[in-house]
Length: 160
Image (cartoon, rainbow, N blue to C red):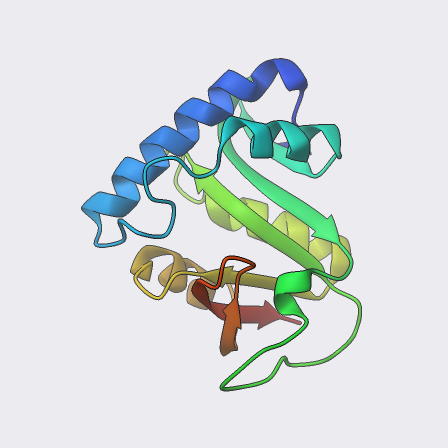
Protein backbone atom coordinates (compact mmCIF):
# COMPACT_ATOMS: atom_id res chain seq x y z
CA UNK A 1 0.00 0.00 0.00
CA UNK A 2 1.06 3.55 -0.73
CA UNK A 3 -0.16 6.92 0.56
CA UNK A 4 -0.22 9.97 -1.69
CA UNK A 5 -2.06 13.28 -2.01
CA UNK A 6 -5.46 13.13 -3.69
CA UNK A 7 -5.70 14.49 -7.24
CA UNK A 8 -8.63 16.79 -8.14
CA UNK A 9 -9.81 14.37 -10.84
CA UNK A 10 -10.30 11.70 -8.15
CA UNK A 11 -13.10 13.62 -6.40
CA UNK A 12 -15.85 11.33 -7.74
CA UNK A 13 -14.05 8.26 -6.41
CA UNK A 14 -13.99 9.86 -2.96
CA UNK A 15 -17.66 10.83 -3.17
CA UNK A 16 -18.58 7.19 -3.88
CA UNK A 17 -16.36 5.95 -1.05
CA UNK A 18 -18.05 8.28 1.43
CA UNK A 19 -21.52 7.29 0.18
CA UNK A 20 -20.63 3.65 0.89
CA UNK A 21 -19.12 4.61 4.25
CA UNK A 22 -22.35 6.33 5.32
CA UNK A 23 -24.32 3.19 4.43
CA UNK A 24 -21.83 1.02 6.36
CA UNK A 25 -21.93 3.32 9.39
CA UNK A 26 -25.74 3.38 9.46
CA UNK A 27 -25.90 -0.41 9.20
CA UNK A 28 -23.48 -0.71 12.14
CA UNK A 29 -25.45 1.45 14.58
CA UNK A 30 -23.97 4.83 13.67
CA UNK A 31 -26.44 6.65 11.39
CA UNK A 32 -25.89 10.13 12.83
CA UNK A 33 -22.14 10.81 12.58
CA UNK A 34 -22.11 11.57 8.84
CA UNK A 35 -25.88 11.52 8.23
CA UNK A 36 -26.88 11.33 4.57
CA UNK A 37 -24.65 14.01 3.08
CA UNK A 38 -21.38 14.47 4.99
CA UNK A 39 -18.80 15.18 3.80
CA UNK A 40 -20.17 17.41 1.03
CA UNK A 41 -18.26 17.39 -2.27
CA UNK A 42 -17.12 20.99 -1.62
CA UNK A 43 -15.48 19.95 1.66
CA UNK A 44 -13.62 17.18 -0.17
CA UNK A 45 -12.56 19.58 -2.94
CA UNK A 46 -11.35 22.06 -0.32
CA UNK A 47 -9.35 19.26 1.34
CA UNK A 48 -7.78 18.39 -2.03
CA UNK A 49 -7.05 22.03 -2.90
CA UNK A 50 -5.42 22.68 0.47
CA UNK A 51 -3.21 19.61 0.08
CA UNK A 52 -4.69 17.83 3.10
CA UNK A 53 -6.57 15.03 1.33
CA UNK A 54 -4.76 11.72 0.99
CA UNK A 55 -5.50 8.39 -0.61
CA UNK A 56 -4.20 4.92 0.06
CA UNK A 57 -3.51 3.05 -3.17
CA UNK A 58 -3.02 -0.67 -3.74
CA UNK A 59 -2.45 -2.09 -7.25
CA UNK A 60 -3.30 1.32 -8.81
CA UNK A 61 -6.69 1.38 -7.05
CA UNK A 62 -7.75 3.86 -4.35
CA UNK A 63 -8.79 1.76 -1.36
CA UNK A 64 -8.92 4.39 1.40
CA UNK A 65 -8.94 8.13 1.93
CA UNK A 66 -8.50 10.58 4.80
CA UNK A 67 -7.74 14.16 5.77
CA UNK A 68 -4.37 14.78 7.44
CA UNK A 69 -2.88 18.03 8.66
CA UNK A 70 -0.24 19.04 11.16
CA UNK A 71 -0.98 21.98 13.43
CA UNK A 72 -3.65 23.29 15.75
CA UNK A 73 -7.18 22.07 15.08
CA UNK A 74 -9.85 24.34 16.56
CA UNK A 75 -11.94 21.31 17.57
CA UNK A 76 -9.13 20.14 19.87
CA UNK A 77 -8.35 23.42 21.65
CA UNK A 78 -10.76 22.52 24.48
CA UNK A 79 -11.31 19.01 25.80
CA UNK A 80 -13.86 18.06 28.44
CA UNK A 81 -14.18 15.14 30.86
CA UNK A 82 -10.49 14.37 30.45
CA UNK A 83 -7.27 15.77 29.02
CA UNK A 84 -4.87 15.31 26.14
CA UNK A 85 -1.82 13.12 26.76
CA UNK A 86 0.42 16.12 26.06
CA UNK A 87 0.34 19.64 24.61
CA UNK A 88 3.12 19.08 22.06
CA UNK A 89 2.62 19.90 18.36
CA UNK A 90 0.39 17.31 16.71
CA UNK A 91 -1.22 16.09 13.53
CA UNK A 92 -4.90 15.31 13.01
CA UNK A 93 -6.80 12.78 10.95
CA UNK A 94 -10.40 13.39 9.91
CA UNK A 95 -12.84 11.70 7.51
CA UNK A 96 -10.95 8.42 7.27
CA UNK A 97 -12.67 5.65 5.33
CA UNK A 98 -11.78 2.64 3.25
CA UNK A 99 -13.62 0.73 0.57
CA UNK A 100 -13.35 -2.48 2.60
CA UNK A 101 -11.52 -4.45 -0.09
CA UNK A 102 -8.11 -4.67 1.61
CA UNK A 103 -7.94 -5.64 5.25
CA UNK A 104 -5.84 -3.25 7.31
CA UNK A 105 -6.08 -0.24 4.96
CA UNK A 106 -7.40 2.13 7.64
CA UNK A 107 -4.71 1.00 10.09
CA UNK A 108 -2.09 1.57 7.39
CA UNK A 109 -3.37 5.15 6.93
CA UNK A 110 -3.36 5.87 10.67
CA UNK A 111 0.17 4.49 11.05
CA UNK A 112 1.36 6.57 8.09
CA UNK A 113 -0.06 9.73 9.69
CA UNK A 114 1.42 8.87 13.09
CA UNK A 115 4.84 8.27 11.55
CA UNK A 116 4.69 11.73 9.95
CA UNK A 117 4.25 13.59 13.25
CA UNK A 118 4.67 11.21 16.22
CA UNK A 119 1.71 12.82 18.02
CA UNK A 120 -1.70 12.26 16.49
CA UNK A 121 -5.19 13.35 17.57
CA UNK A 122 -8.48 12.07 16.19
CA UNK A 123 -12.13 11.99 17.21
CA UNK A 124 -15.18 9.90 16.45
CA UNK A 125 -18.86 9.64 17.27
CA UNK A 126 -19.84 7.83 20.45
CA UNK A 127 -21.88 5.38 18.33
CA UNK A 128 -18.97 4.57 16.00
CA UNK A 129 -17.91 1.34 17.71
CA UNK A 130 -16.04 0.15 14.60
CA UNK A 131 -13.80 3.24 14.65
CA UNK A 132 -13.31 3.07 18.41
CA UNK A 133 -12.09 -0.51 18.01
CA UNK A 134 -9.74 0.54 15.19
CA UNK A 135 -8.28 3.31 17.35
CA UNK A 136 -7.83 1.02 20.38
CA UNK A 137 -6.19 -1.61 18.17
CA UNK A 138 -3.74 0.97 16.81
CA UNK A 139 -2.57 2.26 20.19
CA UNK A 140 -4.72 5.38 20.55
CA UNK A 141 -5.82 6.33 24.05
CA UNK A 142 -9.21 7.79 24.95
CA UNK A 143 -8.69 11.35 26.25
CA UNK A 144 -12.12 12.94 26.68
CA UNK A 145 -14.87 14.77 24.83
CA UNK A 146 -14.61 17.52 22.22
CA UNK A 147 -17.31 19.51 20.44
CA UNK A 148 -17.45 20.30 16.75
CA UNK A 149 -18.16 23.79 15.48
CA UNK A 150 -21.85 22.83 15.12
CA UNK A 151 -21.98 21.70 18.77
CA UNK A 152 -21.96 17.95 18.06
CA UNK A 153 -20.14 15.86 20.66
CA UNK A 154 -17.24 13.59 19.71
CA UNK A 155 -14.99 11.37 21.76
CA UNK A 156 -11.32 12.22 21.39
CA UNK A 157 -8.25 10.02 21.16
CA UNK A 158 -4.53 10.61 20.97
CA UNK A 159 -1.48 8.52 20.19
CA UNK A 160 2.03 9.56 21.23
